[in-house]
Length: 278
Image (cartoon, rainbow, N blue to C red):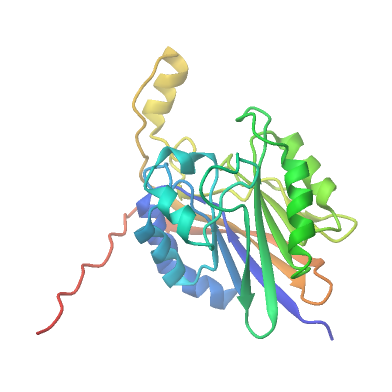
Protein backbone atom coordinates (compact mmCIF):
# COMPACT_ATOMS: atom_id res chain seq x y z
CA UNK A 1 0.00 0.00 0.00
CA UNK A 2 1.28 3.44 -0.92
CA UNK A 3 2.03 5.74 1.99
CA UNK A 4 0.59 9.25 2.28
CA UNK A 5 2.61 12.29 3.29
CA UNK A 6 0.52 15.03 4.89
CA UNK A 7 1.65 18.60 4.26
CA UNK A 8 0.29 21.54 6.27
CA UNK A 9 0.58 24.96 4.67
CA UNK A 10 -0.23 28.04 6.76
CA UNK A 11 -1.42 31.21 5.02
CA UNK A 12 0.25 34.62 5.39
CA UNK A 13 1.07 35.26 9.07
CA UNK A 14 0.25 38.92 9.76
CA UNK A 15 1.86 40.49 12.82
CA UNK A 16 3.65 39.13 15.88
CA UNK A 17 0.47 38.40 17.90
CA UNK A 18 -0.60 36.06 15.10
CA UNK A 19 2.85 34.50 15.13
CA UNK A 20 2.53 33.73 18.84
CA UNK A 21 -0.95 32.24 18.35
CA UNK A 22 0.36 30.02 15.56
CA UNK A 23 3.45 28.86 17.45
CA UNK A 24 1.32 28.00 20.49
CA UNK A 25 -1.12 25.89 18.46
CA UNK A 26 1.10 24.42 15.74
CA UNK A 27 2.26 21.32 17.68
CA UNK A 28 -1.37 20.35 18.34
CA UNK A 29 -2.28 20.90 14.68
CA UNK A 30 0.60 18.65 13.63
CA UNK A 31 -0.70 15.90 15.88
CA UNK A 32 -4.38 16.39 15.01
CA UNK A 33 -3.85 16.20 11.24
CA UNK A 34 -0.95 13.70 11.28
CA UNK A 35 1.34 16.22 9.60
CA UNK A 36 4.85 15.32 8.43
CA UNK A 37 5.79 18.57 6.69
CA UNK A 38 4.90 22.15 7.69
CA UNK A 39 5.31 25.15 5.38
CA UNK A 40 4.43 28.68 6.54
CA UNK A 41 4.20 31.94 4.60
CA UNK A 42 5.96 34.45 6.85
CA UNK A 43 6.31 37.58 4.72
CA UNK A 44 4.04 39.70 6.95
CA UNK A 45 5.19 38.78 10.46
CA UNK A 46 7.13 41.95 11.25
CA UNK A 47 4.34 44.57 11.32
CA UNK A 48 3.24 43.32 7.88
CA UNK A 49 6.75 43.77 6.45
CA UNK A 50 9.14 40.85 6.42
CA UNK A 51 10.43 38.49 9.07
CA UNK A 52 13.57 38.53 11.21
CA UNK A 53 15.85 35.78 12.55
CA UNK A 54 14.11 35.49 15.92
CA UNK A 55 10.65 35.20 14.40
CA UNK A 56 11.81 32.59 11.90
CA UNK A 57 13.41 30.58 14.71
CA UNK A 58 10.12 30.62 16.63
CA UNK A 59 8.41 29.01 13.65
CA UNK A 60 11.16 26.41 13.26
CA UNK A 61 11.05 25.57 16.97
CA UNK A 62 7.28 25.07 16.75
CA UNK A 63 7.66 22.49 13.96
CA UNK A 64 7.93 24.45 10.69
CA UNK A 65 10.18 22.99 7.98
CA UNK A 66 10.18 25.79 5.37
CA UNK A 67 9.17 29.47 5.42
CA UNK A 68 8.01 31.14 2.22
CA UNK A 69 7.71 34.91 1.83
CA UNK A 70 6.66 37.34 -0.94
CA UNK A 71 6.90 40.89 -2.17
CA UNK A 72 6.75 42.46 1.33
CA UNK A 73 9.93 40.66 2.37
CA UNK A 74 11.96 43.37 0.62
CA UNK A 75 10.43 46.17 2.74
CA UNK A 76 12.31 45.06 5.85
CA UNK A 77 16.09 45.09 5.52
CA UNK A 78 16.37 42.80 8.55
CA UNK A 79 14.94 40.04 6.38
CA UNK A 80 17.79 40.11 3.88
CA UNK A 81 20.50 38.44 6.00
CA UNK A 82 17.99 35.70 6.83
CA UNK A 83 17.29 35.10 3.14
CA UNK A 84 21.00 35.07 2.40
CA UNK A 85 21.98 32.56 5.08
CA UNK A 86 19.07 30.21 5.80
CA UNK A 87 18.15 27.81 2.97
CA UNK A 88 14.83 27.01 4.69
CA UNK A 89 13.60 30.59 4.20
CA UNK A 90 12.85 31.23 0.54
CA UNK A 91 11.59 34.14 -1.58
CA UNK A 92 9.96 34.28 -5.03
CA UNK A 93 12.39 32.78 -7.52
CA UNK A 94 11.59 35.17 -10.35
CA UNK A 95 13.03 38.32 -8.74
CA UNK A 96 16.37 39.45 -10.21
CA UNK A 97 19.06 37.01 -9.18
CA UNK A 98 21.20 39.76 -7.62
CA UNK A 99 18.76 39.85 -4.68
CA UNK A 100 19.68 37.66 -1.70
CA UNK A 101 18.07 34.31 -1.12
CA UNK A 102 16.79 31.41 -3.15
CA UNK A 103 13.44 30.58 -4.71
CA UNK A 104 13.32 26.86 -3.98
CA UNK A 105 14.70 24.39 -1.49
CA UNK A 106 14.40 20.79 -0.31
CA UNK A 107 13.94 19.29 3.15
CA UNK A 108 14.34 15.74 4.41
CA UNK A 109 11.21 14.32 6.00
CA UNK A 110 11.33 11.18 8.12
CA UNK A 111 13.30 8.31 6.64
CA UNK A 112 14.14 8.64 2.99
CA UNK A 113 11.59 11.28 1.90
CA UNK A 114 12.51 14.63 0.37
CA UNK A 115 10.04 17.48 -0.14
CA UNK A 116 10.75 20.27 -2.58
CA UNK A 117 9.30 23.73 -1.92
CA UNK A 118 9.18 26.39 -4.63
CA UNK A 119 7.92 29.97 -4.58
CA UNK A 120 7.20 32.20 -7.56
CA UNK A 121 5.39 35.54 -7.75
CA UNK A 122 2.75 36.73 -10.18
CA UNK A 123 3.05 39.80 -12.39
CA UNK A 124 -0.57 40.89 -12.88
CA UNK A 125 -1.11 44.03 -10.71
CA UNK A 126 2.35 43.41 -9.17
CA UNK A 127 6.01 44.12 -9.93
CA UNK A 128 7.07 43.53 -13.56
CA UNK A 129 9.58 40.81 -12.69
CA UNK A 130 10.61 37.72 -14.67
CA UNK A 131 7.98 35.32 -15.98
CA UNK A 132 6.69 33.12 -13.11
CA UNK A 133 5.69 30.34 -15.51
CA UNK A 134 9.14 30.00 -17.06
CA UNK A 135 10.77 30.30 -13.63
CA UNK A 136 8.50 27.59 -12.22
CA UNK A 137 9.18 25.30 -15.17
CA UNK A 138 12.94 25.66 -14.66
CA UNK A 139 12.76 25.05 -10.90
CA UNK A 140 10.46 22.05 -11.19
CA UNK A 141 12.89 20.38 -13.58
CA UNK A 142 15.70 20.94 -11.05
CA UNK A 143 13.64 19.75 -8.08
CA UNK A 144 12.45 16.61 -9.84
CA UNK A 145 16.07 15.48 -10.01
CA UNK A 146 15.77 15.02 -6.22
CA UNK A 147 12.08 14.38 -5.51
CA UNK A 148 8.63 14.08 -7.06
CA UNK A 149 6.99 15.66 -4.00
CA UNK A 150 6.92 19.38 -4.82
CA UNK A 151 4.86 22.11 -3.15
CA UNK A 152 4.47 25.50 -4.88
CA UNK A 153 3.51 28.76 -3.15
CA UNK A 154 2.31 31.08 -5.92
CA UNK A 155 2.35 34.59 -4.45
CA UNK A 156 0.03 36.50 -6.76
CA UNK A 157 -2.81 38.99 -6.88
CA UNK A 158 -4.95 38.02 -9.85
CA UNK A 159 -7.20 34.98 -9.51
CA UNK A 160 -6.90 34.13 -13.21
CA UNK A 161 -3.10 34.11 -13.01
CA UNK A 162 -3.19 31.77 -10.02
CA UNK A 163 -5.61 29.37 -11.70
CA UNK A 164 -3.48 29.44 -14.84
CA UNK A 165 -0.43 28.42 -12.81
CA UNK A 166 -2.38 25.50 -11.40
CA UNK A 167 -3.18 24.22 -14.88
CA UNK A 168 0.36 24.93 -16.10
CA UNK A 169 1.88 22.78 -13.34
CA UNK A 170 -0.82 20.10 -13.21
CA UNK A 171 0.90 16.71 -13.20
CA UNK A 172 4.32 18.28 -12.64
CA UNK A 173 4.03 19.12 -8.92
CA UNK A 174 2.09 17.88 -5.91
CA UNK A 175 0.36 21.15 -5.05
CA UNK A 176 -0.05 24.77 -6.12
CA UNK A 177 -1.41 27.04 -3.38
CA UNK A 178 -1.88 30.77 -3.74
CA UNK A 179 -0.91 33.44 -1.23
CA UNK A 180 -0.88 37.27 -1.02
CA UNK A 181 -4.59 38.19 -1.08
CA UNK A 182 -5.22 37.04 2.53
CA UNK A 183 -8.75 35.70 1.89
CA UNK A 184 -9.17 31.92 2.03
CA UNK A 185 -10.94 30.71 -1.11
CA UNK A 186 -13.45 27.87 -1.47
CA UNK A 187 -12.03 26.18 -4.57
CA UNK A 188 -9.76 23.47 -3.16
CA UNK A 189 -9.57 20.64 -5.68
CA UNK A 190 -7.31 18.07 -7.27
CA UNK A 191 -6.68 18.83 -10.94
CA UNK A 192 -6.96 16.03 -13.56
CA UNK A 193 -3.25 15.12 -13.60
CA UNK A 194 -2.96 14.89 -9.80
CA UNK A 195 -1.97 18.37 -8.59
CA UNK A 196 -3.81 19.81 -5.57
CA UNK A 197 -4.88 23.40 -6.11
CA UNK A 198 -6.21 26.30 -3.98
CA UNK A 199 -6.42 29.93 -5.16
CA UNK A 200 -5.59 31.39 -1.73
CA UNK A 201 -4.79 29.78 1.60
CA UNK A 202 -5.97 32.82 3.57
CA UNK A 203 -4.46 34.80 6.43
CA UNK A 204 -3.24 33.95 9.91
CA UNK A 205 -3.94 37.11 11.86
CA UNK A 206 -6.66 39.49 13.07
CA UNK A 207 -9.79 38.91 10.98
CA UNK A 208 -11.59 41.94 12.46
CA UNK A 209 -9.67 43.95 9.91
CA UNK A 210 -9.08 44.69 6.26
CA UNK A 211 -6.50 42.03 5.36
CA UNK A 212 -4.86 42.59 8.75
CA UNK A 213 -5.07 46.39 8.63
CA UNK A 214 -7.00 48.55 11.11
CA UNK A 215 -10.41 49.05 9.52
CA UNK A 216 -10.58 52.80 10.25
CA UNK A 217 -7.26 53.39 8.51
CA UNK A 218 -8.22 51.21 5.56
CA UNK A 219 -11.48 53.12 5.11
CA UNK A 220 -9.72 56.50 5.27
CA UNK A 221 -7.33 55.39 2.54
CA UNK A 222 -10.25 54.45 0.30
CA UNK A 223 -12.66 57.26 1.14
CA UNK A 224 -10.15 60.11 1.17
CA UNK A 225 -7.71 58.76 -1.44
CA UNK A 226 -4.75 60.08 0.53
CA UNK A 227 -1.96 58.41 2.49
CA UNK A 228 -2.62 57.29 6.08
CA UNK A 229 -0.11 55.43 8.22
CA UNK A 230 -0.63 51.69 8.21
CA UNK A 231 -1.76 50.24 11.55
CA UNK A 232 -2.13 46.59 12.49
CA UNK A 233 -5.60 45.49 13.57
CA UNK A 234 -6.41 43.50 16.71
CA UNK A 235 -9.00 40.90 17.59
CA UNK A 236 -10.59 37.74 16.19
CA UNK A 237 -7.27 36.02 15.57
CA UNK A 238 -7.55 33.03 13.25
CA UNK A 239 -5.21 30.55 11.65
CA UNK A 240 -5.96 29.80 7.99
CA UNK A 241 -4.29 26.94 6.21
CA UNK A 242 -4.61 23.89 4.04
CA UNK A 243 -3.80 20.20 4.56
CA UNK A 244 -2.70 18.23 1.51
CA UNK A 245 -2.24 14.47 1.39
CA UNK A 246 0.40 13.42 -1.14
CA UNK A 247 1.19 9.93 -2.37
CA UNK A 248 4.79 9.51 -1.30
CA UNK A 249 5.58 7.23 -4.24
CA UNK A 250 4.01 9.09 -7.17
CA UNK A 251 4.02 12.64 -5.79
CA UNK A 252 0.37 13.05 -6.80
CA UNK A 253 -2.09 14.65 -4.41
CA UNK A 254 -4.69 12.38 -2.85
CA UNK A 255 -6.62 14.94 -0.80
CA UNK A 256 -6.85 18.65 -0.03
CA UNK A 257 -8.88 20.46 2.61
CA UNK A 258 -8.77 23.94 4.10
CA UNK A 259 -8.67 24.57 7.84
CA UNK A 260 -9.50 27.53 10.06
CA UNK A 261 -8.60 27.70 13.75
CA UNK A 262 -10.33 30.33 15.91
CA UNK A 263 -7.88 31.80 18.42
CA UNK A 264 -9.94 34.56 20.09
CA UNK A 265 -9.25 38.22 20.75
CA UNK A 266 -6.40 38.01 23.25
CA UNK A 267 -2.87 38.86 22.19
CA UNK A 268 -0.37 36.23 23.29
CA UNK A 269 2.87 37.70 24.50
CA UNK A 270 6.18 35.83 24.21
CA UNK A 271 7.29 34.00 27.32
CA UNK A 272 9.81 36.00 29.40
CA UNK A 273 13.42 34.99 28.97
CA UNK A 274 14.79 32.96 31.86
CA UNK A 275 17.87 34.37 33.53
CA UNK A 276 20.75 31.87 33.47
CA UNK A 277 21.38 30.35 36.89
CA UNK A 278 24.75 30.82 38.49
